[in-house]
Amino acid sequence: MFKTWKKPLRILLATTMLSGVLAACSSEPTSETETSGGDGYYSAQFENGKYVEPVTISTVFPITSSLKFKNGENIENNVHTKWAKETLGIDIKYLWTVSEQNNAYQTKLRLMLTSGQKMPDIISFRGDPTLISDLIESGQFTDAGELFDKYASDTYKKAMAEDPNVWNPYIRDGQRMALPILENAHNNDPVMYIREDWLKNLNLKAPTTLAELETVMDAFVNQDPDGNGVKDTIALSVGFKNNLNTWMSDSGWIFGMFGAMPNQWNKAPDGSLVYGSVQPEMKPALAKMNEWMTKGYIDKEAGLYDETKATEAFTAGKSGIIVGPYWMTGWPIPDLEKNVPTAEYKAYPLPAGPDGKIGRHGTPISAGAVLINKDMKHKDAFFVYQNYLYDNWANPESTTFVNGFAKGYDYEIGPDGEVYKELQSDKIPGGWIDAIRYTLTFDGAIIPNLMMSTLAKLADGQKPANQYEKNLSERIPEQIMAAKIVIDQKDIVMPEMFTGVPTKTQVSRGDMLSKLEKEVLNKIIYGQSPVDDFDKFVEQHSTSGGKEITEEVNAWYDTVK
Image (cartoon, rainbow, N blue to C red; front, side, top):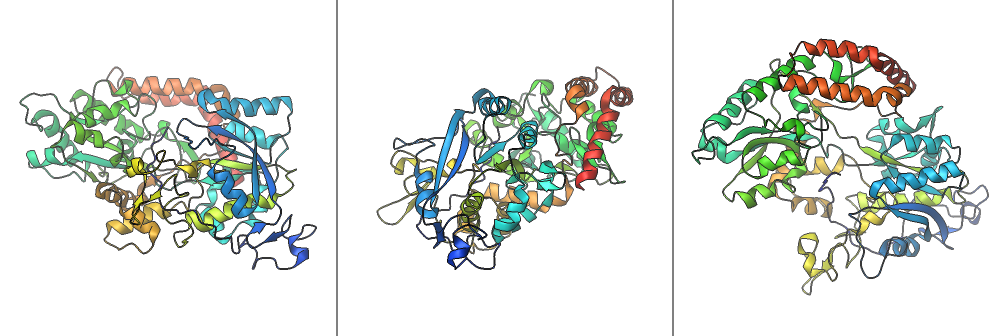
């Protein structure tokens, strides 16, 4: 669903063997006893960074619409599976694969559960925490945390340690029953994009406060910022068909100016978790959105627009402000330049509210997990595989992968040594293929805070110190500056604090409460109900299951905090 624009194309396939791949141990095993099973560190003979005789990892895999193949390959037989066998001595076998359309992957896993089928060695999964929980509760999977402590390399461990809370969704009776799949931190945190040419046309400065923001918005609506002599512009593109706090065309930051963050669980001053949409700070923010709707600052259809639809006014040149992730500079904002060649835009920090508050939603650094079968013969093999990717693909100091994962796939070398990548796809025989997506965790390996912090350093004028940083420095300047703003404002993040499985009352009452929330809050924003109806909504929410859900969420939180 998300356009991430997060992969620096930085890796050259090489045959360099893994040295110290299991760095959780002080050194690579050297004796026959240590490498040949029994009480040894590895489950099979392991020399020069690979298994002497290939060991097998069985798995299953979802084929997403973005996954592409060439050269007659498929997920079972491709450049990635050949790399794993040749480099690490690991033979990846797929029990089945299925298209991800219509949740087919989830459905097939559930069928395996209900029919009592034997599970593969590992299952990698994103989304649907209930399914992950059900897989854990099946009793077929082992304590992944214990294995992680024993086998993970230092690089892998440091990446996971950047936020120990990533384990929380998978903790059962003190055991970490799945390995979190790490993502780039702050990847979807929002910044404010403003039509710079409109500011110049009206002799305005970018806003830093709510009052200044309203001055700019009023001018964008009423002072003909595009100079066409017609009153046909709006100030702010937002879409809240799905949620108020969302991934693009966001309005969560509006509530953040008042100390609120809807649609998520926030940490209260007393240390407990509270549901953001029913907190008193919501009320003045709703009144403000109603005021903006009345004044024409936001589109009358905003409540019907999803995240993508809401961007269209901005990219068509009819809206002056939009809030969303740093990667919007790669998509969809370039459409603005196509539609209005003279248009200029620039990223700015989110403004402060009446009491100086600034708030934005955060980006979870884990969006899925790997479960390891308790009957897997070579449990260490997954860590041999993943350690290599952390120590070489994710680690910017490594020179194993320089231009991309595989020559002829995500890069090609020209006759004079020039490197062709995604933007020169026509120079790569058969086109550009993002082969790292074939990996067992879908993205190879990610050190959560590395990418955005590196972009921020580059924006500050620091020279690239390695190939990873050089590749990031080749991104468009607008994207690098937007990333810096994200990092500069990282202290204003209001993270989602509840990452557990939906509680009993959430399952039974959640859909009803969500429908009630959208109906009441949208009516207030549209002026169809008075803002004081928010107080009635809070009471109704509580007596309709909200009170029980809050108790259940905090009972979960007590087990992990």
